[in-house]
Length: 404
Image (cartoon, rainbow, N blue to C red; front, top):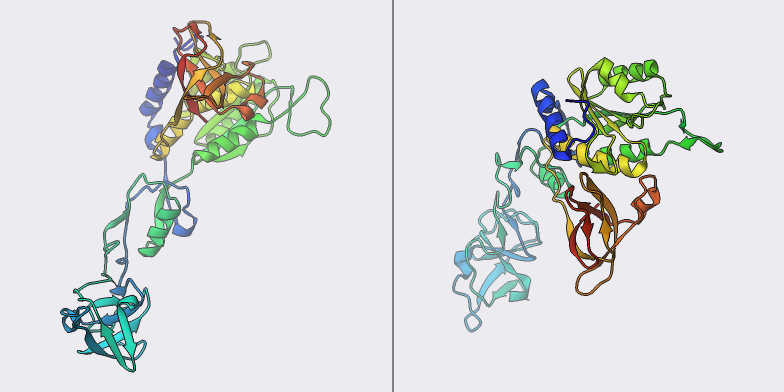
């Protein structure tokens, strides 16, 4: 069955996913303990408890005067209360006394409230208070934000700027996170060159591996770009074998279409198991899903549009699940087709869309379909998925465009 050339996309993914569940790979992501200061973008693997309360002391929430509420509970505009002024920075607030405090200052011993400076008048060494003071007024209590021992960051949380601040404030200087998946990207083909100031006809500068590395790193991976492997089964098999040994996942680019110079399928058949080869999507049909030594290996088409699309469809969700990383919410925009769409049935088609001003809905302009046109990925705002059973969408049809 694995040699089929037109697998429905979801079925192909589910078969690969099931095979990876069976090998235990999906539950094999290791963890590591790191300094919280370098945890930005990482996934929390173990709940992080607060090592101290936030705040860890009772402090003033306003600029003003710390007082004992009982001394000013009956203050009013017509019946002001007068308290003697204590020194700035006094450690204790005595009965009948008010101590000047700034926002964030610790309350002096004995004080339980703060009155804002705007509600008072200072005359000589006396503070006149013209409004009633309640216990706890304008005071940040111990643990008001976070109590010691409380979970600051649950497992599965992605560390962003706010999460980093919370961990540091609560004294969690080290956190346990999912290790970044190690991925090797192997560009293949005699026509692909790593770099060149001049490209002769028939040679193509490798750009897909850079695109893939950027994409995969955005999903939490650490990526190693392998030198270009020529069209040689032995050398490709050797490259894949060493990459699998050193990586959690291997991505092969190009060499999957079945042409006379495409050796990916042959190499992977000899190293492991090809789960699916050929998926009913346009562009991107030649995608290949395999396992080698229980690890996922994917062959992506060489055209840049096909490469980006198939990586997004088959690797994004997989890598998020592997790390315990929550998938970001998909963003869709409703728009009206600016022109009719004709699509062959039997395969899902993904069209690149530019959104233009419209009333009341934006207009969805379809870009050229060529899978080699990398410039269309720069211009487009998102994808329009045309279902496999749909052969035509009329101009003016309201569609859902998924933003990149």
